[in-house]
Length: 329
Image (cartoon, rainbow, N blue to C red; front, side, top):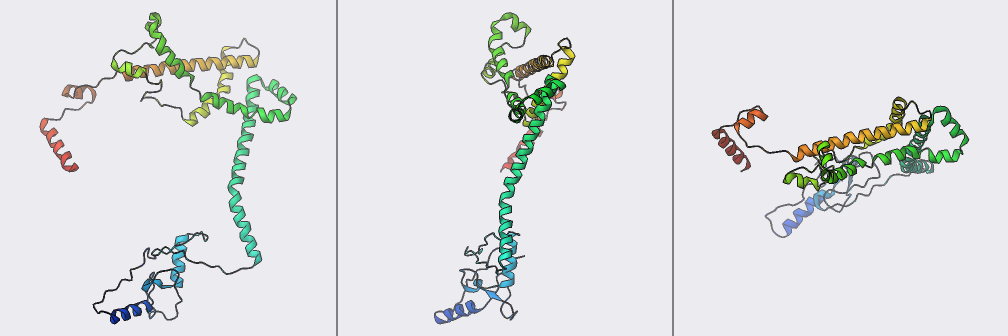
């Protein structure tokens, strides 16, 4: 493997004046490859090159050794610049001319390499667009009915369908990103305590104590037991499954309504309301649990009760402290 740094060309000599200058000149004239450390006497037929601004013995290198060293640095990218590790001069790499046809192929290869990311991005966006159109069409047929949906889309302008159908999944995902439960939860925390009847029925009154007062001013999601935001995959799945869930709930609980659209809307509102109420209740209970927590004394009885272990003796505690102190030092 090639050396990363050139050996230094510093020489030490006790002879003064002309002898030292003569010795330096002889050292500079002596060719020694800084890659393989071979000298001119080792191989008389080897080609030598001075590729950089280095002086002394480090200015010489075998052409073949330098070619291998450049290949290691470029790693297959022949357009990458390679610098001398010592003087940081850029090597002058010249390729022989291979003719007009090869130059044309090189140009086409470079153009293809540059436009490929844009083509891939266009294909990806186009695929997403047509998937959105398909999902929008399926959602329309699911919400208003299969036959009614087909008739509606057949009678509509194709250009209007190409514009409106992709907006259906976008609208569902955008609406899902708004967390309305937190606003309702903050409202209930603020006003339910003022209504005694609701304060006894629902657990939305202010939590007693200093910690409850502190947490009351925080946001509804300021809870270490819950995520401050939904994951993108959860938002995506919940939004796209909403029409299907709404249709199923509408068929189960609103069979008396013959209009498919009205039945699906009622099913969706029912699902959103029940789910939101459960989430609000769960968040509030976690809020109460977190605000009511206590830190107990480190006693043997508490260790046995909550951890199922025995308390360490004083000698063990001192020994542990000493060991930690020794490690820190």
